[in-house]
Length: 55
Image (cartoon, rainbow, N blue to C red; front, side, top):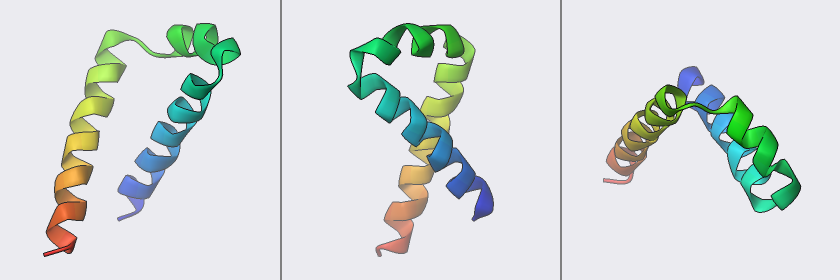
């Protein structure tokens, strides 16, 4: 689904930023607790969806 692909693009940006120490400060200002919980929930939903495709 398009929404899932858009979410993966958002999530990928955070992984890239997290790999490089100079981006840590930027990441901490762009992500709050509410948004982090939202991303965690969406990641779980996406994982379940992908897993269902593999059955």
